[in-house]
Image (cartoon, rainbow, N blue to C red; front, top):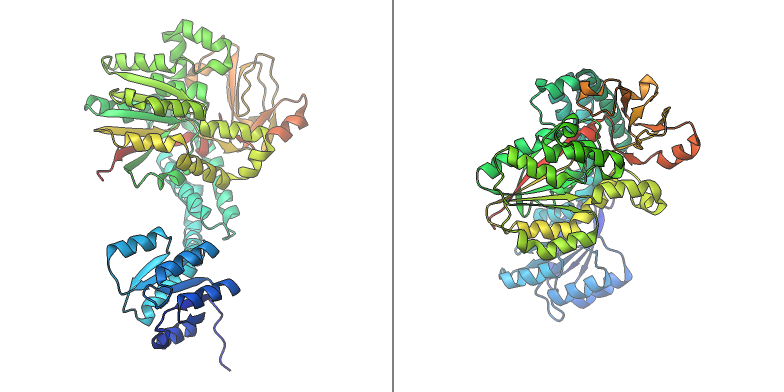
Length: 524
């Protein structure tokens, strides 16, 4: 008994010479496709109205209703139904018309059975094939990657591992049905735990220069100043809380306008805006700020929410120290969409500035609001949803328009980076502290802090980590892995509030290893 080939999809084929295509149809049927042949556009519409099809093969030159008219009518009925146009006419205007009507593909006669089969296979099975290949490649890589996670002992090895893990994150976003997300998530967790051990053992040495990797306070030196010294205009875009995986998801949206060089830098600890972003714009470590700017530091220290109010001043001072004082520069912090639109409207005024520095808060605000809003939790249920929302924002917001405009500026380089990342937390750690302790969930500083050793890094001597201290009693605790700090008072309410939220300030690959993308406009 001959086993029947399973149906791979239902194809409608419209051609006024369909009888001559019998060998092609038989070949498709042998491959497992169900083919409905019709002689005209009118017949094609009739079949589309009464049945469900996976794909339409449509002749462009037919008696009666021609292919373009039939295409328009089919799309009016089923906009998502893919249509392949087949024609003898190679004129460009016809191709433009068909593409404008959202055809899925275009073939020029004569066509052979194998050619038709490959088009059908590509259209109807592309997603499954890619998913199968992605799963196969990841499962092949899994064991080797796991071994590297267990044996990694250097910062360079960990960064390479994290780049690979984040690439898999982005690839799996398009293959959500693979069932491998949990396996990948477990690899992430194991990697972050082991990386945390390395950070706690070697972070102090790294800050003293034992690694060649760039930290927050070295970002301008490494990625911006050389371009300014060479005479190029630079637009520095610091997207608050943007992670490496989120940048990788965004990247494909920019590759049509820019050539992109991708590197990384590491956030200093704590991985939080008052520390890491001040370090970026000042070119200084946190304990150097009170010494250089004592009055401004006192003003900042009075209100934790205003710790980044002097970034433009820090930038001006940095340029002066680097003997770039004469460089015309502008700084903007963009929190709302209205602020972004206002900048767009005035952008031509700033096109002569040699350094345009922008801080964009959308990604960070998204993380903070998610912890407070059930609606946003529905939109961002997990890491993949977070990446998708950020991509949608870039594609549709003022940010994309701004980058497109800057792409037209002569001799302009865009450096896009982040001050810190975030991690989804799920393990509450009880902490004891007095009323003057800082409010962070992943890090705290103050007096009389007491946290279990398993919670993270306890810093009793802040100067050893280049951190500021009000007095000799000041100490820090920085969470590691997926931990977050909760006070014993009203413990369960705050656990419920923060568990599963995206937080920053701690020790993890996601918070520390950050993208630096150098974008140069394509000459189109």
